[in-house]
Image (cartoon, rainbow, N blue to C red; front, side, top):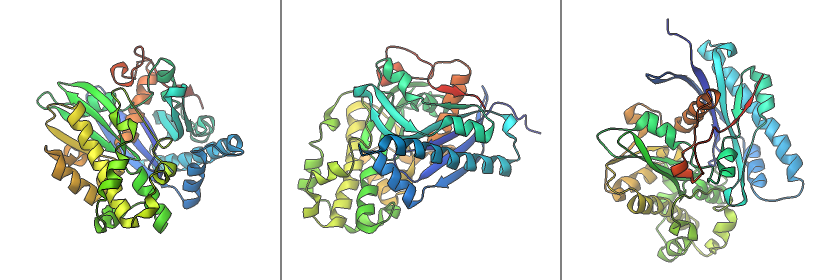
Length: 365
């Protein structure tokens, strides 16, 4: 019988707003093994609540606290369902890495806000919860993001090849790995966030399945050029971004109503692809291969465009044994394990913080 030790749960809900991903990991010095996973989809109402909370509004303090409780209950239900189907008791789980739902990421202002009531999650699962990973890095002068490159280093690095781990969630981000070291990590720009926003506004769909709608359109050169005037694309490292930058207001500022809706979708997809290509060309010299994870890896048209223009092999992380939909949740299980062991789990050379820090707050059941 397998030794049931070093079991952690990772709970991730990203800027793509599709729901809550939960993974159970066995973490040992020899390997990282997945024992099971669960997905709790967001309803349209839940998605609308998050979108509203992502911008300043009346009564947002009370509404954010109310949603934090709601989010924790959804996570708890998913966790308890996963425990039941894997026949694992809560006592066998060492901790839960609970990211929460980002509604503000403002390292320039000294804070990042991920809502989700960790007290309630600990109460409902009877498991230690580790939460609020980003702010410790921010107060030490860092961006608080990206946090997953250290996990990528431990799981994906190769002595033979320089690898890029490309996560395409709401925001696209890169970890550049070489010689068992993480060299760089940063946010490229919008991943699915604008694509999802535009199709939601026009067709009331939460995402463009396989990029089918974008495929029907054509790139509008003057619009694409206008998109790339955004100063973020010209920034040096370290840098990170989110919905507070790339949102419906950002789209509206470009007068997209003047163009055919499907052409806007096609142009937004090209923005995602070209911003990734530019990031690789500018910061990842000598990269040998790219492995893609996150929701964008399921967009067939997006993947086709990446394969065509990147110039080096592009594959999903599935080909090296890691389901592309679970990588971020796995990372927060791993980060939680580091916190509980009192080990630094940020990357100062990536986030720009003053030094190694132990991220996260521990909540006891």
